Image (cartoon, rainbow, N blue to C red):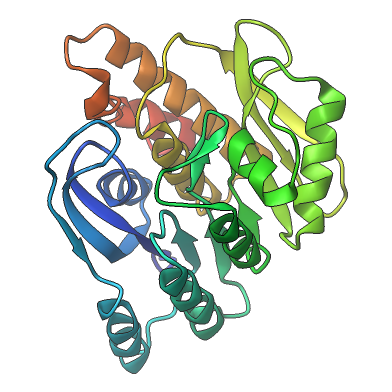
Length: 282
């Protein structure tokens, strides 16, 4: 039997709110991938709608965790980095990628730092530049439109975009050094929303699904996790993107029919059977 693949997920752990590691661990594990977690911080809830949350920074622990993993000979098939809260954490992840990448290890970076045309309150343009330098080391990056604009110095366009605008943004992202790009939040017509992917051949591919009303916390993490799980199950870049888009849409549709506030995140858990069917696991 083939050995089980391993992925190291580097992200924060928010106990409540369905984001970051509390999404990555169940989704990627369900895809049959051993998911090894490096928490960058621990919070009682996510910060995008709750107040009074607890926060513990784990920056000092990250190199110690890495050193222990190195001592036991950990060799991952993939590294997936998400939300990083400081310049120090970005530098640690750069070193970590260098230390743990084998010949066939895939480094996937999600530059979680902005949305809806603006940077998160913690960050500034200097941070965006440093995050871009981390993404330059990655095999695959997963920015949304806003993050891509800050990474490339491109004007942000709200709502429907032109194909020429997206193509230019994809080319600029490749020019930063990343080998492959998955760009989320792409829309060429009202009522449709999806993603674009591009690699070394510079030939973009697009996938669109239904655009659902509202903004939902944690959907970027759901997309990234579903993408990682599909990719490590040997789906192509395009098909992994397609599966992730549909998984997010399925999760949002279910959430819209519920009474829980949007702040608690989308109901991805009951969509895992749908995801596994897409992966051919059931």
